Length: 232
Ligand SMILES: O=C(O)CCC(=O)C(=O)O
Ligand SMILES: [Fe+2]
Image (cartoon, rainbow, N blue to C red; front, side, top):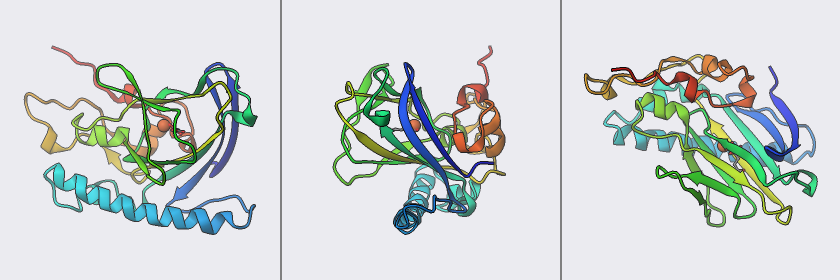
């Protein structure tokens, strides 16, 4: 399996250049430039601490003991992939879409950027809202597997990136923090009863990443394939 992947997309549906690396449980990175490993490695180490803090807080909000999500997702060996994106690719896009609408798999996504603007979220009313991320802030977006675990109580939000006619050059770094690849994720018992049947089928994180035909490092959502069709 690839642990580092470079890609260049420049067509009507997607316009970005990216570097994806598996950042946890093993940290992979290009050997050049030499300063990359230390700087980004320190960021991932600290982000893992933030992840454990968020896992504790969300576990408590869901009514479980604070180590619930950490254990349930086996976060000490959680599978994290970081995507470093450059928009537009080579400063020339072939359309207005940087990344088409999608949700991300995993527990949550942490995102940092150098320039504000471009990222949009779809609201529950069906409107696109531009995300304003204050300078030096880390944006957190929940992922598919928290939606599955909570049987739909928490939503994995659909988002997209829109480009500004090649006028703005933006770099973002989106890290998808996931469960361990061997962990079977299914709706938790607390969220299932007669009036709330399971809305998603369970499978391991690895299987769900491969369900749509992608590789693990692509970390593409397969939530629509995991939803159990509603029946009367
Ligand atoms: O660049 C962004 O703002 C978002 C990128 C993104 O959604 C992704 O890499 O999954
Ligand atoms: Fe995303």
